[in-house]
Image 1 (cartoon, rainbow, N blue to C red):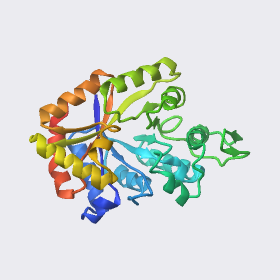
Image 2 (cartoon, rainbow, N blue to C red):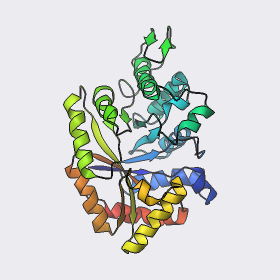
Image 3 (cartoon, rainbow, N blue to C red):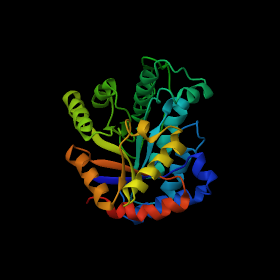
Image 4 (cartoon, rainbow, N blue to C red):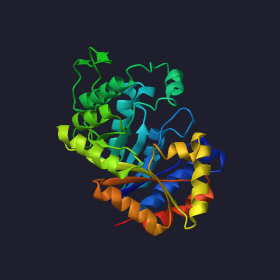
Amino acid sequence: MKFGLVVPTYRSILDAGRTAPEMVAIAVEAERLGLDSVWVGDTLAKTPIDPLTLLGAFAASTERVTLGTAALLPALRDPLLSANAILSLDLLSRGRITLGVGAGFAGRSEPEFAFTRVPWERRRARLDDIVALWRHVWSGKSGPFHGEVLRYDALPEYPEPHRPGGPPVWLAAFTPGALERAGRLYDGWLPYPPDVADYADGLAKIRETAVRPVTPALFATVLIEDDPIRARERLEYYAQRNYGVPLDFVEKIQMQIAGSPAQVADKLREYQEAGAEHVLIRIATQEPAEFDEQLPRVVDALPR
């Protein structure tokens, strides 16, 4: 099983004192610690450092790790310009880019779509079209593209990607429709279900309909804390600060584990046994000093 680090880039960690160059240093440290990948999020609601710009800095400062988005909201950007930006990252990184993408989370993402004047309706079809359009132009095609939402009668010509066909694209979603689409249209699956049985069931459904190899990944929120009461308190604080809702609500949706190194390792092994092959670790803190203290402890706890 591979492990990656989600680098916090949102406004809250910037307000706490983290700088953009320090984010690049975290990517370098993650590579030094032996992690397999480094990831950044994407939103307009919390005005983070732009993920594609930051991945360019990561590409220039690292040599080995996969560089990815967890998860990009492609609808917020012009599809052809984002295709060019991603292709540029692919070339700069020598083929190390992987894209986790999503259509937005109902109840939270609607303002982001409004900011960019993109219709919220048919957002999943729009996402599928954008990904299909990217692959279309990354394959050297400049002829017409007619999807369900996007239609182009002519397209610009793009350079050949470092990786034939361009970077792999993983779907970050867990709805019943997403399970069918992941196996049919995407190269990977990036959910965060709190119940390992649900993960195993979802992966089985994907494999029933898959027409291409699909990398089973997992987005996991982790904190090393031996004291169970303190662990719960710290997760509660993180949920309130990051989402503005109680932990009781968040943990019904997201996989979260706070405990001793052994407890963290055991939980991750459960997902490994359920089929997860690449786990993206998000450390449950927005305090720079606490993040830096947690990082080596989390890495030491990962099952290898």
